[in-house]
Image (cartoon, rainbow, N blue to C red):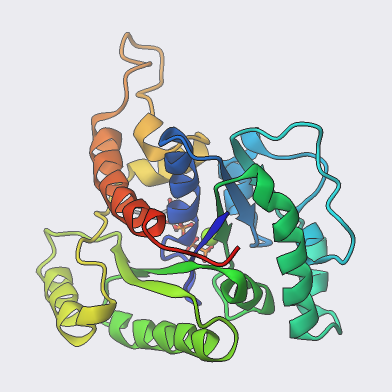
Length: 268
Ligand SMILES: Nc1ncnc2c1ncn2[C@@H]1O[C@H](COP(=O)(O)OP(=O)(O)OP(=O)(O)O)[C@@H](O)[C@H]1O
Ligand SMILES: [Mg+2]
């Protein structure tokens, strides 16, 4: 089971958008795919609620007890968050090493059931996010493009390097994924060019465009490429044009990532 994590300590940059759409995309490409919602806000748990396992939550992944596995698991699943217990874990007395060891053991129990797990994380430098980073195989850094993005990105890159050096030397960094990019705004185009120049080897070369369809799709609990026109008209079951364009763009990025992940050897 390969483990993928979008991470950034800044909030609202596209971690959840990336993680739940990627989870769906993997399943549509034939992989058994599960999303773990590690953020007590529960945005991913809402976006993927129809696929939630009922017998345990993301908090149970940090327990030293075996997972109460359901009789059957779908090829597409969500392990939902648990607001109260995730907060307790964040503040508990257990050493970080113990949390990470528990997480490894519980993920080993999930591994026979899924080809990929994707972790959604909170927009903060939290223990939980760092524990998920410590056990992941691949990381990507969604980032908005604004005058602060260079310094924000430098901070996240340092954090990933710290995790690589101290906890997880095998972690592959796919780099910064520019999100909510508006090519009609000259300032953004300029900032993106600057990022490419200053962080060349840590940048995913294609940005994700700003499109309203992402918000609507999360609310409708579908991946963006399945967002329908809705309403009462004859077109209500037709996929929205903006959603189709968004899907085409983000799925091309996902296919590049899958290609890299499928080609990589990871630890068992
Ligand atoms: N490319 C995009 N175009 C337009 N809207 C987007 C795009 N990506 C994300 N959004 C919207 O921006 C908001 C924040 O995105 P998202 O929830 O994915 O960020 P996040 O990093 O997970 O935030 P948090 O740190 O709060 O968990 C959401 O309403 C989402 O639908
Ligand atoms: Mg989020």
